[in-house]
Image (cartoon, rainbow, N blue to C red; front, side, top):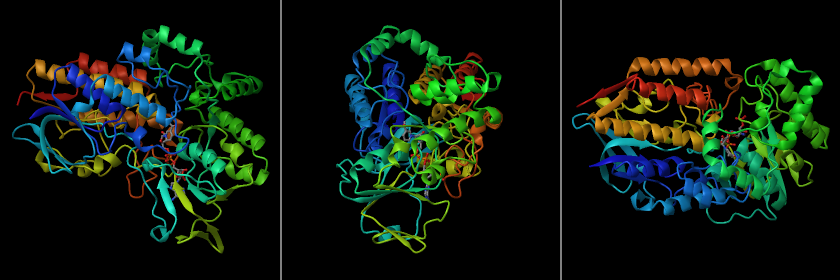
Amino acid sequence: MIDVVIVGAGFAGLYMLYRLRQSGFSAKTIEVADGIGGVWHWNRYPGARCDIEAMQYSYSFSEELQQEWKWSEIFPTQPEILRYLNYVADKFDLRKNIELETQVNAAIFDETHSRWEIQTSRGDRILAKFCVMATGCLSASRIPSINGLETFKGHYYHTGRWPQADVNFSGRRVAVFGTGSSGVQIIPIIAKQAKHLFVFQRTATFTVPARNKPLEPEYEQWWKSNYAEHRKQMLETITGCLALDMKNCSAMSVTPDERLQEYEKQWQKGSLNFLGSFTDLVFNQEANDTAAEFLRNKIREIVEDPTVAEKLIPCGFPLGAKRLSLDTNYFETFNHDNVTLVDLQQAPIDEITPTGIRIGNKNYELDDIVFATGFDAFTGALFKIDIRGRAGKTLRDKWADGPCTYLGLMTSDFPNLFIMTGLGSPTVFANAALCIEQNIDWITDCLVYLRTNHYETIEPNIEAENDWGKHVNAVANFILFSKADSWFNGANIEGKPKVFMPYVGGVNNYRKKCQDVVANGYQGFILATQ
Ligand code: N01
């Protein structure tokens, strides 16, 4: 028997393995892919890159690592991030405890011996005292069921399961479904290659220019010479990111001209910080409307055909309620002759045919279809595994009406099972790398505490779990982010209970709550000696 099985070798799985080994635990990581990297292994579609600055979206645990690694751009590409993660795996000799190309099929808790049995696609049964699900919040990709897809004679792809072999769209007629962050990134790139690109849009999206550029040596140096201090400051923020030169006041407290100036300044700078132009954009609808209207006017300015521009203008939900994207030439792409916007709000698809897509009498002849249609977020990857806790209860059954956790880290009746999928925690609204490190540090400290004090099991008590759920909901209702159908609340998956899943209370508040729980003797958890 080993101490810990970790499922997943992405950002979280790698650091978890590192911390456990450092702390003297035996651990093994199981990963279904043929390489490490998690989402950065799978999302290798053209244009994929991070939309949080690399100097911040990176590990902080090793001063040596953060000093020696050199990012080339402000927002690095997927290949660069994957190189970084591979470098980390080699530098810290992690590979020897990672088993690739292995699917975890089941994780069953054995109450008699207080241990988990992990069953894999290789037919192995691994016994471990603890299990950590580092399976990612956006890892279960989803292709919508569209009539006739199986008859299509061309190729089709999902951005979140992109092939490792080069895909070349030169001279081809390509359709893209989906205009979220993935669609916004891939559409301008495909438009450059394809003979013709058809964008099948169901919901128009808000996006801000990334204004990505090479990392300037002075800026890099400024980060590297103050890294410890910067990382400390990042932990005290809502988003886990340092945002410089932001106005710290309400949008409604300044004149309309001042507002526009500030939006223009943030627009010119680029970055998701646009949403923090003023402090109340995320909870005051009137304030939010002013920022949304600014962005709508930008679309009207950029897109030359006014009819196309109007179709590209998002409305009906607050800015940020579907995740804001960063783009490079997204709206400009619709000025190209080889790009056609197909508005699915006007007429939905009838079917996919062997040679394309049919809407009414209109046939779109296609060679390739790209689905940038997102993920079964938070729970999708967990539910692929048959997870059973006390009395054989399945996680799927326990969460039939929606997931419930304490601090996003554990759920009652599933002792010694740690979850890090962004449920009930701020990860998806923040710097995921920082949130992952915070979660893993907490879990490692917890395991050390259990070992030192001879506890066999830990799990939340149901009251603490319910209270956390209520708090997550209360904060979500206060913020405008819950006011749209999206993957935040499961509305993108048919039949999934509509529950707002992430915690929007901020990295700083969440971290403080996690620290307080520990300071109060793991308040809200049941610790047992057998
Ligand atoms: O997925 P999404 P994503 N017919 O769910 C549309 C992270 N990420 O992969 O809104 C037609 O956001 C759907 O339309 P609608 C980031 O956190 C980060 O783009 O449901 N269209 C929507 O437009 C992000 O938020 C980066 O009406 C259909 C799109 O598909 C998260 O991953 C890059 C459809 C799905 O958008 C998910 O982003 C990429 C159908 N049947 C992703 N079904 C970075 O930059 C769905 N759609 C770091």
